[in-house]
Length: 385
Picture 1 (tube, rainbow, N blue to C red):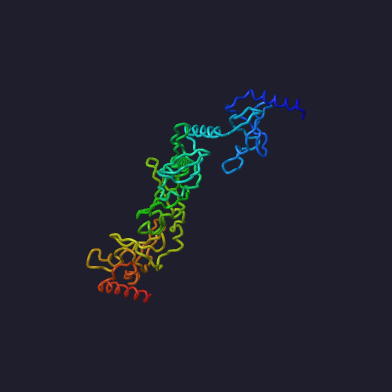
Picture 2: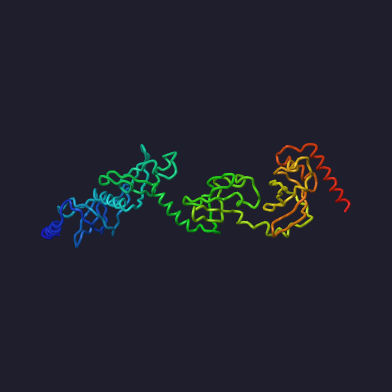
């Protein structure tokens, strides 16, 4: 290139540069990236250059590629236009954060480290503070568990032009939980099948966490076809269960759940398994004034009337011989599957005396003698047939 051509090129660059001023912020498109500088188209045939380091992130990886649009500040117009993203890049991030704050939009941030009262959060190139109480919905026992994690945060304070930024992950989680709960509630209708986790257990039932902060009650009577004394005998906190929605109270929002409804009703086939004259082993589940209820199979109970037990000196003396939990042998004397009723009678003394199986005190000698005598008569009658 001759001196005249070299001078002409410099003069043309100088003329183009006069349209721009030092300190001016402009927008351009990266058109090439060299070994040391990048070239940015800033309108028409005008190009500017920028140090390649300013196109990289803190780890040295390119965050801007050819074709990307950037904002930069003119730091020199001598012999051409030189740009810098220092300051502009932070200002751009701050504008985005301020917009997110005003619009209530979540932003992504990385938990750098725990500090006094909370955490230092990095959002892009900005730093923010998250109070300890705002890092999670549940109480954080060990603050270190969140360090290095990337979460979505809600900006709850933005002051002094972005010099003071306070964020909350808890608020974001609560909003997500409410949104999830609203969507989930639309699926909670009678007969729906849902998966959940046992949150707490009481004698009368268990509360099942269905997600989104929604819980339903699984009553002990709806857990299994078999009669159990307490829900604690069936489930424990943390168990994962599949439940059927039985009822939803529109007024209170209470949800009733069941698990036994997912199994066949044992009475539906009882007619093929039970018949008059059969002798079955059963367990006394509860007592009433008129007799003892005996479980023959899970969900199948029969009634042994008080009159079928040996008489006693007191009005309900028979009940002392068969406390709940007693196991024994009973004969089926009547059956009505449609009404779910089976009539029973104790067969021998073993079925009525084996109270040690229930953990209760042994029968006294008088009770044993009375029941033994009745058992002998029953056996004699069977031998004569």
